[in-house]
Length: 158
Image 1 (cartoon, rainbow, N blue to C red):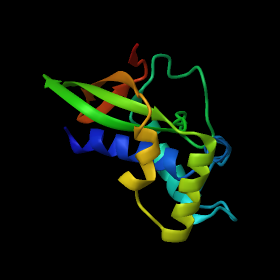
Image 2 (cartoon, one colour):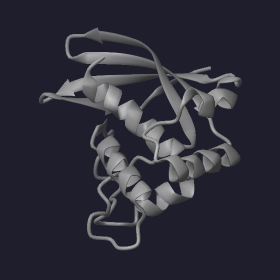
Image 3 (cartoon, rainbow, N blue to C red):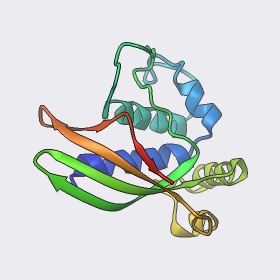
Image 4 (cartoon, rainbow, N blue to C red):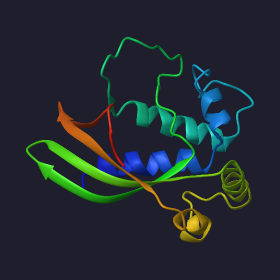
């Protein structure tokens, strides 16, 4: 799997695990994270990762929504694990498992980050999630002018 695609999923999981949906939504309102005062380092990191995620989405209708912070994707409170990648001629199909995270679990991970300054959630942190049945999604990626872009529409397998 190309590093750009792997980084996308790493960024999504970091943002989902180490911030709440409310915090992620609030980051949309901050036009310039580098110049904003009073924002903790954790949320600055989440914001920069959200911006990077947003830059990797190939929009169906790019002008329909505007966002002052420059990112339009707010990952849900869920953890994504890549299970299969099929590459062919500048395209990739990435099959992922997605586990929803309860608000209590999400807050627990945020608290762990604040205490231990982690860069990712450990298997132990996520053990309870993996006891649930995940949903399966297929994400389509395309190489556009030398950059891997995920198509906005995803396929959710029931």
